[in-house]
Length: 444
Image (tube, rainbow, N blue to C red; front, side, top):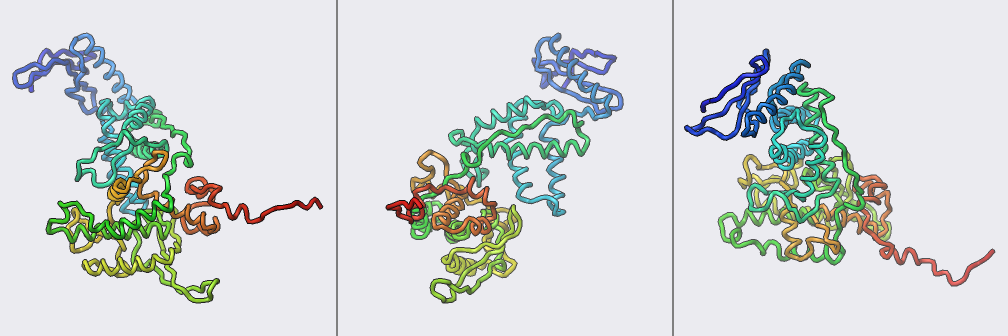
């Protein structure tokens, strides 16, 4: 690569030139900036063909960098991606030290890699040049993209985004939090001044309006009937006719028990994923109706609201017992310190995944819903694996279980429970509302 037609400006601190590559002169002007005691900026395109316009562009960039140099800030052009990679190392170390939730760190990586980096690379701005208007424009861009593909997106032909699936303001706000984490790191690392940090405002949203939909009781029965009686035998031919058919069967059984136990326990997905066999307490309690002692399971889980105990529905005892027997058949350890749901030792499912927490099951679950024709509710809202928890909580409300009991078991406040999880209607309480049949009124 050869630099030609070189001119110098601003006391030889700005160089303007063309580039000849493989014998051909490129059509745009390029510039270099060399401020004393600062790292040189070289071979930056002005994207201008005209010399005067190119010089104006280079001069503007020079003035910005000169101001930064005078304030003692490095002028080295840094992209959003470069700052993110440094922040990734910083937050990764905090996860290892126990100061940051691994799930939050995973979200930080996924959001910035897949939903933020593409936009800032598209607008081609240095990190220090990103302003509040760029953040607002990112929100518009992100809204147009729709929901991100979750699951094994890198091992399938599924698209990165689904424009036909609207992304909620709540999701955008979570992703804005992940952008803020990058800027918090940049400020701590003195890569920028506080005054240079763009304003990042959250969007207004209603949790009740944007909450996930539930399943009706008949829909849930349809799901459980399919995954219990047909899901294992309904493997695609490319799975059923290979040497790995037993492994595929194991993972389908994993899904089968995982989804049903989500309903039986009201657990969050992450709480059930990280449950260990030693955290399942098998108790005998007295049934107040019959006076007999009955078996009940209590799970000790640790999720985003901290540690708590979860009481399971009676049938969960059989499900856990059957799943444990399946794990033993596949030589998957079931000791007290072993995860209930994990990649078994006898498989090579993903690099270094043996014995670790399972990946998301949402893509597989949505496949089941689409097969059954209930992937969306009557209003067109997408159902996800998290809809199972909403269904379990709403069904408990319909059974007139007390709000306090459900709140404790689900790990949410009563206010959040009624605002975000309660899908019941007044008709669900018709007998409760009409239990007093007033035929006359006493005016006394």
